Length: 500
Image 1 (cartoon, rainbow, N blue to C red):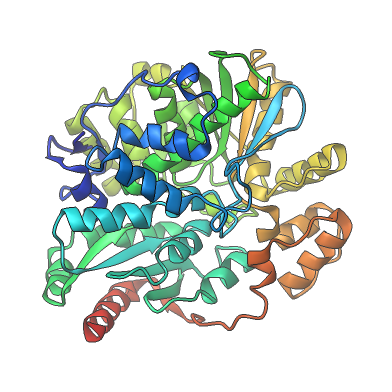
Image 2 (spheres, rainbow, N blue to C red):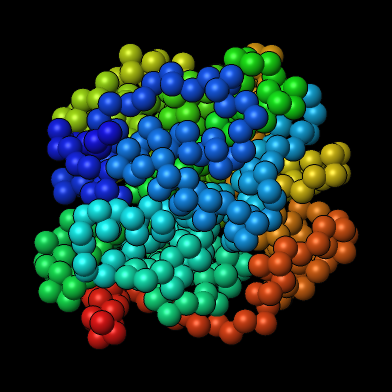
């Protein structure tokens, strides 16, 4: 398997794409030939999550032997990295809807499912490419990616990681997770700006010849842990395949039966992994893109116009507070019939005007597989309250957005009698202020006091990673202007060089 850019015919080996993240022309890497309709339930039945992941990744990371892949997967998914031996357990709300729980990893978010494996993939790719420079992972986060990446790459030899997050755009618990991060090779900085500011800056850094030349002189190579990297994206396909197998095993659907999936969506990587799982043979009907008030994606699936020229909102679901979804370019590549020139033009339109549009025919085609919906903060809190009081199940605000969109579709008769899976992206205890508001519990200045309040009412114990967090010291408490991000990166490059 080789990987090509979404903006040209340039092809590279998987190890090169893993190591560099972004194509030289600014495009994203996609498989040169996608492995379509290669998965069937009968070949997956009875397999563990680890075995399913091995099957899925064998189609993409052909640069590794089966033994090498299996060893990396075993190191990534085990009792030390995930609290549930099933890795992705399935919870049934009623006969029509299931919750796929993606939050049982070390940082209590779905990002752990890829970022537990990615460091092993990257380290192996570095060896294959005979790369002797230190790797500097540059990552922008809207909440969960940062902590998961920091935890995955903590003290990994030959690798360093720097994370930027919006100072007022993450939950108090997400902020503490990053500010208190351990490890000798990590760096974290808040910025006065939003996630789009951080992400746009990093994408420019990857193709900036002067910055890259400076890093090269210091023996440093930039890479990414955002889902623009294939090492982040393709491991996520595995949990859609695992979810399908669990649905059949649990009797929720029969073998080959079509089901819908609702995904709370910000940067489009999670739902894109579902799209790839469908292309590989998982019988997904509709992929429903659930948005909060920053509903640029929901509007696109309604109108065919992606328009970033709008107000940016800080919401109860901060990981979705994004207007420029970087993985959307990969989706457009397939909407365009793999026409790289058309994708390049669309991305040029977005860059220059903040707006791009597909044709009416293209919109009709994509809506056969995708639909969008959105709810606001008030509705999100009402959904959390409703699901907890009616089913005894506590949703985080992102999953609540997805469930709320599902409820709206169900009321409108759009589910077509199909079973629906809501992808649960984070543990609810990562968002104590929102949960307290939704359940009408007393609020506290200290997020940990709010967690104790929630635990007292729900009887749900604090997960160990959060229980241990309270007494850890803050290591990274500073904030910088977004215009100073370049200097911050260069300073960290100097520090890495000084340690070498």
